[in-house]
Image (spheres, rainbow, N blue to C red):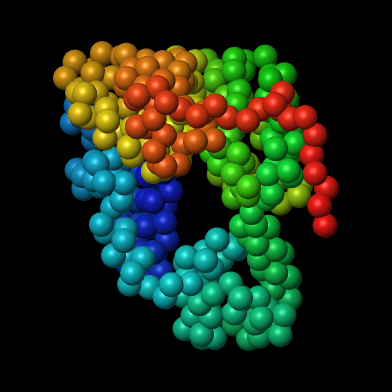
Length: 344
């Protein structure tokens, strides 16, 4: 959901402002806004269109403008300026558990450390202990945190990711408050390698689903959690992002979070030309706000004048044009296989 994306941007802006020693009140404002957006489950686009963003707790006129900017462009100019003004590797350092903005600045100023590689080398050489507040235990914890970050970044082969995703989806299906579930992201598009696992569920009680998910045996560590989304690390160090949406938005959310980004951009452009708006909540008439589709993914494409496009084709490689003229290729399925070659 866009509110989670914006929450992550605001949280990072708070870190960057703290790194450069900015006004503490301003830093707290960004952190509070990030927390409030993370737990917000409404339609942010609708509030922005109605000029009602400032009705959200912790959102003043300045932050409302930045939210509107992100909704319109997919970025916030001030965020980009803040990132450009600090050493490139600082954002990497902030990913390591136990490394906050002040610690990252101390590492950079005292030891010239600005990358995870440099941090790992200094920790293994016990150079961190020369800094105030750094003892053997903290050094060990930082090394453990680096391992977690590296595992989280590693891309998984489809053959590993798919069985794990099916097992996780099975856990979700057994929850009493869950209606429907599906994989999303690059896994659903069947890419050869997967960055992290994206799962989607629909429920009228999202907070209970998130709570049960956090208690499951697959959750070793919670990276972030709100009332409708949770990012966890499995015992194997694999990041799994679960989003829970309303049943009437499941199809739209499935389309949106399956991607690819390029495919979705083309769909939005197509929608605009037809006087429509498409997002993770559904397809709507721009002028009236009337909902045209959302519960089923195929209905989202139909509302845009397209036939349903298989996830494997959604890479902006001509699939939208083929769909409009009903010329989509028929994909090879398991039933089509008659044997395989084993070649050396």
